[in-house]
Length: 183
Image (cartoon, rainbow, N blue to C red; front, side, top):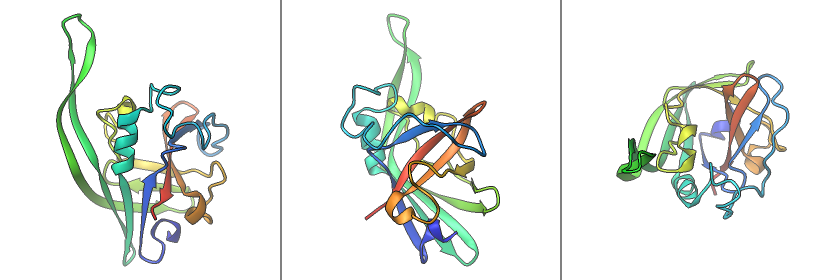
């Protein structure tokens, strides 16, 4: 799919201003309540998902799609936090960072189903462990992702409006992540 790979390789980065949204389930994908000005440097309004650490991970991350023959390869790069959950002295559940890997890289394959507008991705996408957005990737998120037309993004204007990749988060809800072409 040329919208992912361009003429051979295309790199996407998480959109720091319009990071995530929630829409109805497949195939309609209607609604959404965030906008292109929801996130950015506002670490207070949506601190349950977006803070300085989430932004730091997103800033470090990229998805590089490469067309090799008829196969699409995906390379994910990011700053990766390894963590575990424990209980503090007050009995409250907390997360503790065990290790930070500054230049983590993982590679896998992508199979495109153009009819269903889905991508079967063999590796997890960006892991937001170490931030409030850890739940976006806490159990690994490899598998089927929807290509979601949203916020003016379509498969014909990827260069200017990026792509939204989504997964079913609950009945009739799709969590979608916005990626823009890296400059």
